[in-house]
Structure formats: structure tokens, C-alpha cells
Image 1: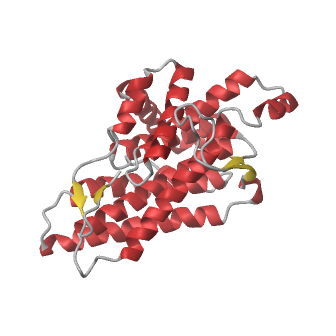
Image 2 (image 1 turned 45 degrees about the vertical axis):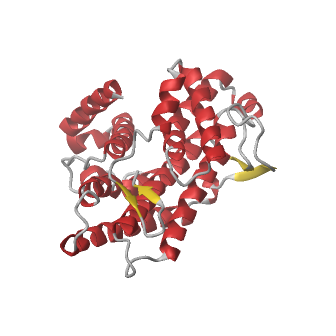
Length: 310
């Protein structure tokens, strides 16, 4: 992680120094967008605000150039690192009436950001839809090694679309986790709303289930026939799919509200991807199991349930 972050910091410094002039070259524009995506992921992981970019619209100064669904998601997700940074501070405040407005403002910001992310999904072109090709009934017997989780199996037009869709799901998980953290912090008769907690839990579970449904596609389901048609290398495509899965699998496996069985399955898929890349499999799984990406404090609400924001 630290080595990757150093590379990203260097890439950010380079694209910032080149300013908006780089947008005139198609390859430079593509490089800028690739770095921006990695920077956004890095900031979300570390709960740090996004650095400024020297352009009229900051990091979205390329908005008018070849707008597409992926760029629109970047714009919708740009608030998430800042909200996570605010959450790190606000949810650590003492539970006093004077601190309530800050937590309420944080919850509203999280709800607004989640609404933008949901709206993005609702306005996607048909090409970005997934197709349900099978439904698995029952929980797998061999949780750690099963290729599929209980429920639907989704396939996408290509790996890029599947990756972008999972990025949106991860961002929504973070927003909903912060909302749950705020409700736990505010736990009282005034703010105890089972509907809001239940809705947040339902959304997180739905996002995790959709990530699970994309895993077989990333790791080769329906891959061979498609690659034969396009002449791509199967092992290379599977490696790319595994790379795209690392972050959403890690986040999904770190969520407290998923079942033990689903968490074991997610960790098994993490081990599979770790094996593809020669990573220390136990280290990756233990990191997810110990909620490395989550931040203290952990709250207990009025129902005795434990919450932490991710």
C-alpha cells in the first residue's frame, strides 16, 4: 500500500504540473483521467480530502471533453473522500448537544452524496446494464473455494464497465456506513429511526450482493467465448479482472452487516485474487477480517448493535 501511494503521489504531482494544457493531447487526457481515478481511490482509502487541481473546475476541468458515464461517476464520487475526512473528525467528537449540528450536517452530506451516486446509476445508458445469466440457490458448501455466491450471476459488456459499476457500489457503501455511524452517534429517542438504519443496512447489503454477483464475470465466467471473438488473451483478461476486484472485495468483506458465511466467501475470493498476483494471501484476508480500512470509534446504538463507519 505505501509503495502504491508513493507512485500515485508522484503521478498526481506530474498531472498537476501539466495543468489543463495536457487536455489538448488525447493520450495526455487519458493519462490525466487514469491518475484522477487512482487519486480518488487513494483519498477514499485514506479518508483524506482531494488536493486542488489548477483548472477552472478543479479535477473536473475536462468535463466538457468527451463526457461519458465513467467521468460522470468521478464527478459524483469526488465528494466521498471529503465526507470520509469529515466523518473521521465528527464521529470522534464527544456525544454532547453542542456537537450534534456537526454530526447532523455530516449525515446530510452523506445522504446527498449517496443520492448523487444513486442518480448516476439510474441514468446509465443501456450498454452499461448487466445481464443475469444464472441464479445460484443455497449457500455454497465450500465457502472458501466456491466460485459463486448464493444469488444471481451478472455479466457485463466488458470488464471496464463492470469495474466502474463496482466503484459506484463501493462509494455508496461508504456513504451508507457514515450514515449508520451518524445514527449510532445520535442514538436517542429523537434520532432513533429504525427505518433509516434498516434502509442503510439494506443498501449496503444490496451493494455487497451486486459486487458478489460480478465476481464470476471478473474471474472468467463467460470469458472464454468473448475472448475468442475479440482475440484477447484469457490469462491476461482474468488477471485484469482480479486486479479490479481487489478493492471492492476488500471493502465488502470489511462490512459488519454481512453474514459470516458471505464474509468467508468474500475472503476466499480475496485469497484467489491474491494467488493470481503472488500476494501474501493470509495477509490480505487478515486485513479484511480486522477491518484495516475502518476507522474508530465504534458505536453502540440503543438496540445494543455495534457500528463503525468504513
